[in-house]
Length: 475
Image (cartoon, rainbow, N blue to C red; front, side, top):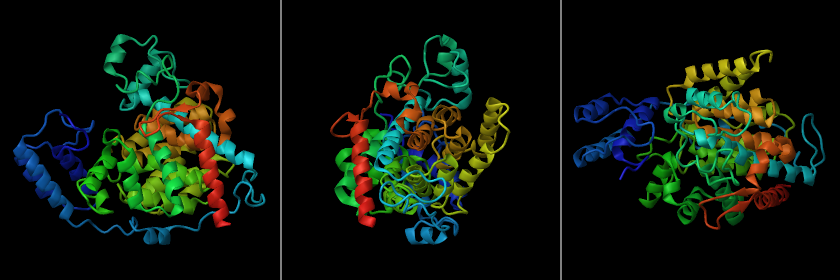
């Protein structure tokens, strides 16, 4: 059985990379592993081509324990605890009292606080998140050059609609095969509602978490909800490692660190939009909820990515422009962290150029993103956060261009486009997203969670009700 994101020999190769990033001296462990016949190169797909022998697998477990026991280097700019994180943050933006219908309108660039606008934004956020995710699904794991070759071969470059297999030459299809799970549900010719995806499972689960426990939920509540609702086979990378650690009765935050080399990858970032949607304009409160969730499986920049995504979602509920959303969200991440630097880099690249040749500007920007972060795994948080920031800023608040940039960047295509789509969808509303992107969803999202398929209208209504309830509690 080839088990991805879990075999000790595969985890060790990734842990050598992660431990080195944390300032640990991994040279002796690496030498022992290589001398024993182990492969120190991390498997891109989650599992190596050949399972290790029992002896080599036992050694991998031993070496993982040794790496876990090594002291990490000092990281004063990247704290883990909430109090230390909060102390590092700049002042929160003055958005929290400008919530829909809960306070009078005031402040430039802030949307009118009325009940209809609030519900429209939540509906747009759910729809945009689903549409962005769906656009990226068939090309997940395909590198940037492969995505472009597919699009050119089918006459769809630059990307401005769904992917299709119609007219795709056989040699191109063989060179760049579609994502196996998604090809049957995510191409223009076969889309029938939003198919199941972890990028939508987690927001639905967060909604249940808040309905059950309110804003005072604990990280242990998150763990219990996972056990009660998530099939283990639909968790990946850090979430799969944390799930195993919960079953092994390891306490929080050891759940995020024990044999979990994926603790600074993108997994937590995709879980936290709902925390922002129920905290319209209160980016700090949204980030606090995201921190509580993310620490189950992530550390440092993996947690900051979750906080940033919640901040984006919160700001998108009240701000008028993408730039205002990005400004507000930056205030919830430690300013000298690697995550903050990645976000700033993406925004800086997007500001370059005069718009005379958009295609060339985007190509140049993505070239520089890949030059800076191309050494990272395709589902790391830093490269994908830089892409999200770049796509949002360069897309200028237009749905199609924004999600298309996120997808053609070629890293975690569905997750990056889902986050981008949620932000722009909130700003534009369902009508602003456009029929091309919203109609194929048919207002439906499939899920592997209990209860089966969900209606976007129902999810939006539940989210809006929580936002109003929590807003009244804070008033």
